Image 1 (tube, one colour):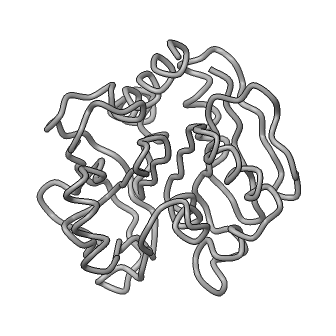
Image 2 (cartoon, helix red, strand yellow):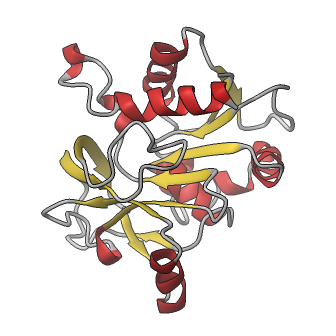
Length: 224
């Protein structure tokens, strides 16, 4: 699986994501600066990682969504490429129109740095095939604007078309509608989620609950 990670001013999770991808593929992903206008050839996956792009000024992810590299990411997605956005990357995906809705301030109006439990709503996608449907796993939250919101029509479509990939299990820490933690595009090739599975891929870092996401991605995209 050939992957690339886009890096913006203020991104701070690109190294964690690179280590997670390298752990399951044996190869280092490319790191692309936000001013790049083209993606490397032969990519299977593009990742928009977490952090605080442009210092979270204006709206989280809004400025990064206008970066030159995002035009190439949109073209890649339009051609059926797989795109994963985590935390700030999820915010970028909504700001760029690749996923619906918006990430608002947490209901508590506080930055949340904590573990959470996620429930897998569907396990038949490249992003979630490493888990059983209905299974729960642990991931780390680190965001101030992770409260997923959309209008009633969009919410009905997400639920009706089974485009909710992950929900918070038990407590809903940031107040997201229907406890939504991650959603998918209609073709199931773009996923955004707020918690960080890349921070749970090594026993020495506290556990491997996030590893199946990357293993499933590698297996799915290598098979394709």
